[in-house]
Image: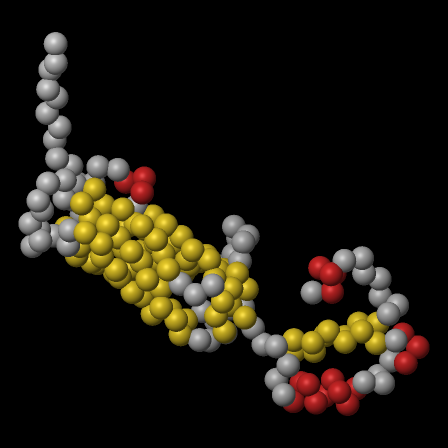
Length: 171
């Protein structure tokens, strides 16, 4: 015997992706595009049927949990199918940044576990130079250091007498 099971149509909203450049200069404006998909649950959806909710863009600087967090939010209306929302962003701290988009619908959503997505970007700071001086001739390159700083380079100096065991020690 076969017993047909009637399925109820269910509305489904998902954040498909967060799209942003992987590498950005310090103080440069860039676009963050959040792609959302809205399925009405009907076989032939009415293109005028919409749903709305709150889209939050959460930015976290660094990889530490104690790092700074900033939020932007916007009330949006979704039409059936793919929807793209663009945020204009400028980050002022160099380093790795995580941007996470979270959508909270006003109405029903079958599965809210897929209502967020995130992406990463690296914000480049000033150009920097590491100068390792011979410990017995300190200051020999002072003119070079001054010229580099005049050209807006960050200059870090150390000596051959300072121990280091890896590249990370020099950064």
